[in-house]
Structures are given as structure tokens and as C-alpha cells.
Length: 143
Image 1 (cartoon, one colour):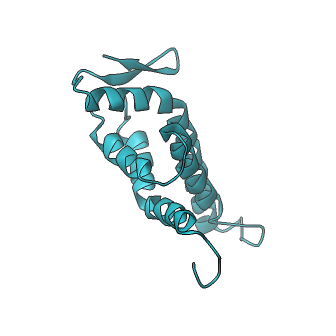
Image 2 (spheres, helix red, strand yellow; image 1 turned 180 degrees about the vertical axis):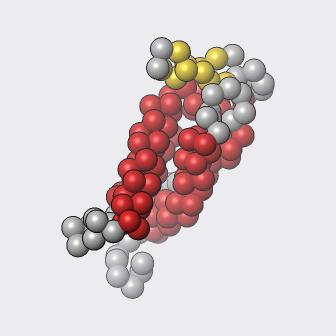
């Protein structure tokens, strides 16, 4: 990046940490979707991911940092094809379907963030019963 952009050390660190979380965020998305997480109390993978997000420099709270990571991943998923892509190709169709699904799951994770962050912080404070559930389509912190 320094060859192409003039960035402060803090800005460079911000971008580098975002990029470094790319694969971890996709693993978290897959965990959320495939394992029907984070319903319940097994929040270890979310806590580990949030610790990495908390290391991103800047004066934003954890929720805002998480939203930035999710936005970057949404943009990445949607960049897998463009107007020049052969949308009739089975390969491109598969990529587009997968990208659309992951963007939807990222949106769902964003809806879960307030309850998820509260539950993870409660676990960090020693509340081993902390978790989240879904009630009436809304994610709720439970203890």
C-alpha cells in the first residue's frame, strides 16, 4: 500500500487489520449460517473474532467496527462478478448465488450484533450463562 497511497501509520494499521480479518469474518459467517449460531451459549468463536476487531485502531465502538468489517465483506462478495461477467454461465450463477447468500447472512449477523456483543461481554465478565436466543424474529440477550 505505501507504494500507491499516502497513509498515516494509524490509517495503514486500520486498513491492514480490516484486510487481515477477511477470512476470519467469512468463517464466522459460515459458522453463523451452517451451525445455526449464535443461538445459545457457545460464543467462543464470536468472542475471539471480536477481540481481533477491537484491535482495529480508531475511536469507534465495537458495533461500528463490526459493521465496517461486515461492509467490507459484503463489498468483497459482490465484487466476485460484474457487468462483463457471463451471467448465463453456471459457474457465474453459482458465484452470484453464493455471494448473495453470504451478503444476506452478513445482514442477519448485523441484526444480531447488539445481543451478541452484550452476551460476549457478559461472558468475559464471568457470566457463563450468558447467551442469545431468537424470540419473535429478534435476537435477545439471555442470562
